[in-house]
Image (cartoon, rainbow, N blue to C red):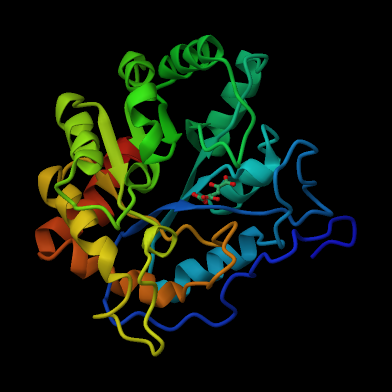
Length: 307
Ligand code: 0GY
C-alpha cells in the first residue's frame, strides 16, 4: 500500500499464494478480465474513486499469469483510476504484446490520446453502470465516445446489474460496436436459471449478434461460495448453471477472466487457482474450452495474429 493512500476499511487483499490449478489451460489462453491498481505512489488513484484498493501492479499480474499458465491478459480499467489510464497503458506496454487494454475515457479525450492508447494496446472502452462504483455519465456522451472508438476498431465493455438491463436495453442496442458484458450482467443466482431475469439476458444475447459475455466472477455472484477446503467440484456451484448456459448457447461470443486482484471483496478472497479449476465445469468439452479461452479472445483482441 502506498503511503499516500489508505485502503478502504474491510477491503481484502488479493490471495498471497494461489494454488496451482489442476485444470491445464490450453496453450495461448487469455485472461480477458483483470486489473492493475497503481502502485498508488507511481500511478495515483483518481480523486472521484469510490474505493481505495491495495496496490496490485503489473509485476504481480504477470507473476500470476505465469503461475496459472495463462499466455495473455486483457487489462480492464478499474474505476479507482477513473479516466486516468496511465497504469493500464504502462502495464500493456510492459507486457510486450501479451496484454491488451480496455480503457475509460471522457468525451474530452483527443484523437491523439486515443491513438496513443491504441499504440499501447488498448482495444476497447468500458462503460460502467454499477451505481456503487461510478457517478452517472450522460448517454449521449457515451454514444459519442462509442462512435469515435468504433472507427478505431475498438469495442465497448459494459458493466451493470441484472435488474438494470430492462432500462439499459435500448441504449445497449444502439451501440455501433461489439459490446462485451462483464460477468454475465451480474445475475442473481438464487433465482432460477430459466427464470425471467436470466431469460432476459439470454434473449439480449440472442437478439444482438454483436453482444459477447464474460462468464467471469463466480466468486462475486455466488451465494454458496467456495468450499472450506480446496475442492474444485464444490466451488461456486450455484453459478455453474448460469455460466454453462451462456457458454453452450453462445460458444463463439464468450470470454473468461480471473478478475484479479478482485476489487471490493469483503467476505472472502478467491484462490485464483480454484477459479481456473472452475472453467471445465462451465465449458465441459475441449472445443468449448478452446473457444472460450483462446479463439474468442484472440478474435477480439489480437485479430491481426489470425490473418
Ligand atoms: C470488477 C468488479 C468490480 C469493480 C470494478 O472497476 C471496478 O472498480 O470493476 C466490482 O466492484 O464489482 O469487474 O472488477
